[in-house]
Length: 587
Ligand code: C2E
Ligand code: CA
Ligand code: CA
Image 1 (cartoon, rainbow, N blue to C red):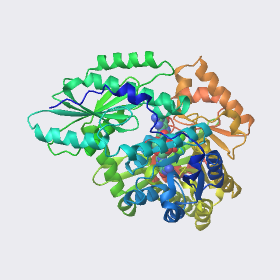
Image 2: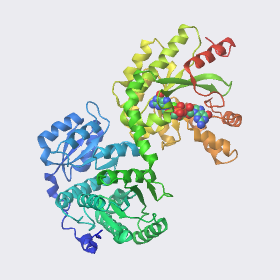
Image 3: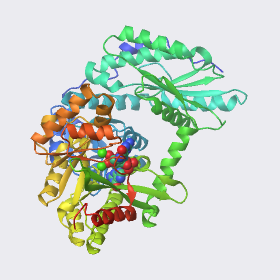
Image 4: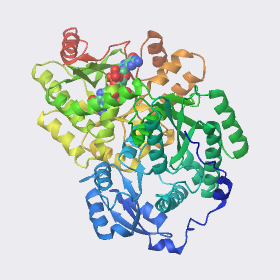
């Protein structure tokens, strides 16, 4: 194999910024399309950008398509929200990426959370980058500028052999060359390695594009040096480099770690981490696009894990992808076939240790996959939006159970159902839930709604609006998993909630460290919540010792295996019946 032309041109390229136009009044002829249903968020983005660019606004994907038809050629970048009525961001993205007129317009997703799945989903549909809410003007301005610059550069060097910044092969050339090399060397073994710089966009945002470029060049040089003449290198995305290595020796972790440490000494501003994903080429006619995609899937399995430098694309990763695909393909049929069942886990008043409520938790009994726990499928459904269908089903099953008990003269206690954050973006949600309790002629207080803490912190405004409405209708609102996210305690007093559910880790910390800070923090949170007139429920209570400590701390309710596990509807009804026969709860 011929070695890549030595990239001695790196230092020259690095300083050559003439290709890039500075941010200037010239940008005013450039239009940025802001697609976001939330008026305030949209206005904020436009205000941040309007000094530098002309902005166009759309409320949803459908309006955005109309805008594209009108202004297509002048739009240099799209800022896109995901969850929107009428047409969501994913659908919009899928449509424009198939349209040759618009497919090259870079799209920055404005996301609510930092879920990797979300990012993978958006990236796989062609998004260029992400900006997280709430917006930092500096990040928005720098990222937009850097992507517009990248696109302009990309257009210029598209058909060129070398990436103008790093001197590595350009993506297209690398792909073509790598495929050719594999095909011409059937006796050799090949690895495709992709590297990614952790939080590279932060470097651009914090120190500016010139420093970002210098870092990229250093890394390109460093990695090319490691490969030497055993393979070829390409830059396939902003900070993603790809390597095809022939007859590779095992990944030299020690050497790479040394190099990264040297890099950090050189850079000095903040710690730079680089991770790698490796795909072992197993077919002569593999497309390099797919090979890099697999190497990137492997990289994602170690992304953010500082103790794991690299991972191989293996069966586990492949199977996980297939598994998610299978779940997605089967979900609607499974719902129709009633494969989902609602279990109920009782909650107990700590004072009397008698039942005071229950939580509805869904389970999936698949005839092919067997029993699936919510941890396996809920995150997938939250990403693809199906969670709302499933939640509606769980809520209705819960209402039906309550109605049946009342009709059969069995005493009931309130049941809380989980309300996913995605559900709360549907404007008609409060009326839907109200309609359900009316349909089954139930008191609204019998249906508690559990909303996870992170929903309030990620995008508080629409969530608080929906939740306030539900509370006005008489529903009791429980903040779930408190302590898992970042809500500050003083924010609690402004939120429309009635019950605080402490995350399991509070209970576990108190038990593990009876005399230490764990107990003090839990006790402090309980006191503060009570001072705000909130009822406190502890989750994940597994032992008598935990029950005693929670009682000492004046916690109101507990839920956990110590008292009862989640159980099928018929067992739960039998439990209620038995308790009423023993006069433990009253009709
Ligand atoms: P969650 O809402 O925090 O629910 C509590 C989880 O803790 C449940 O897990 C429950 O079975 C488990 N658990 C209860 N007591 C104990 C204990 O003593 N020790 C331990 N280690 N665990 C205990 P599950 O049923 O696997 O549900 C996991 C998560 O999936 C739930 O966490 C919730 O976020 C979600 N989920 C479950 N059902 C639904 C649903 O119908 N809709 C939505 N949107 N999410 C759901
Ligand atoms: Ca819950
Ligand atoms: Ca919880």
